[in-house]
Length: 273
Image 1 (cartoon, one colour):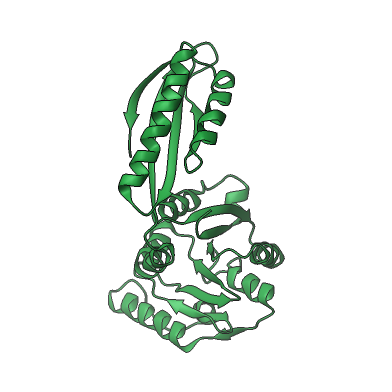
Image 2 (cartoon, rainbow, N blue to C red; image 1 turned 135 degrees about the vertical axis):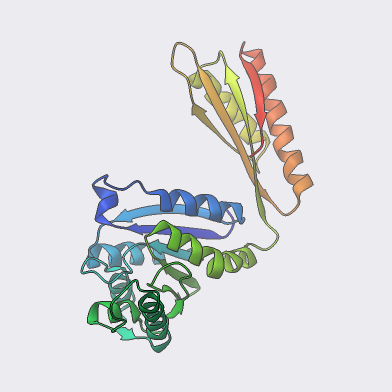
């Protein structure tokens, strides 16, 4: 199963379809590439109780990491840290280190002429109020710091919703942490494409191949239509050695390809991202 991660995305804009959840896609792909396993992605609105409930439920499953996105800014609907604090029965407290980060950002904006004043208004100070015991993470792109805190073996990491800020904090402060936790484990993947075979016919062939290759996960993704089936078949595995991984994938691809050919299908276009 690997080291487990859960992602909680916060924002009404995600629930009403105004904003495509590219953060979840980016995080899932990046976390997987580091050798960890994303077990669940949850989306909730800008509501303290919903955020608290999602956080508590995730904690009950005891993942190694819970990563949230969104809701760290200065506006009234930025409620993620309040929700996390409620889930942990902790107070929000003004964090001196976070306040200094926010102060330096606004001073830099004012100096560059982007703001008339670097005054620390209540809305700006809000971004430096963290759950008790939390540490701020530098934001190389924006103003709101990321946040990290640990509870009973789980690290909760809160990241901004602006994609550029989320990605920058992740790469600067989180990626190395996750990679260290994953150890030598690496994620490997490959795809082949099958023609002239329906997915319902393909399904038992995948089941058999996965049974014979227990370390390989296989998923079919139909790309064509019922009358002219064209299916991407994605193979993936996590291993500590690239040779082992390639051997596993190669064995599974060969077995499934032979089974597909026996059913009159065709296999083409090997792809290894």
